[in-house]
Length: 90
Image 1 (tube, rainbow, N blue to C red):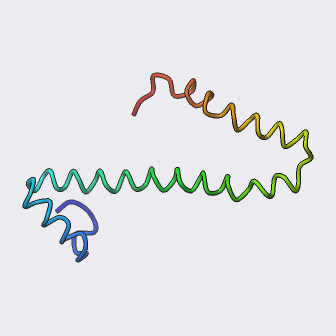
Image 2: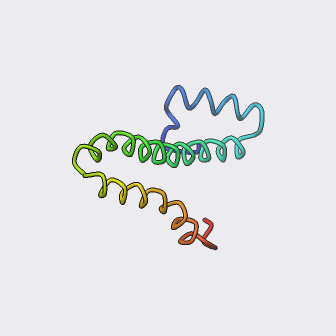
């Protein structure tokens, strides 16, 4: 079988449905893809949620000048990520 959840009723049902449509190996690949997508998706959502939760904390703790610096850093992070990951596709 594909993964460690092979005895799970839900995953066995899903695997059976995909196996009927695609085949055993393709169903296994789709299951792995779904798990990996969930891992990346959860980490992205969690990061954005934490940023949303910390905004009131930042506004209360920092003054206007410091909060402006934090905002500038948040604005520069996407550009830095583009430069840092350039040519390093996984």
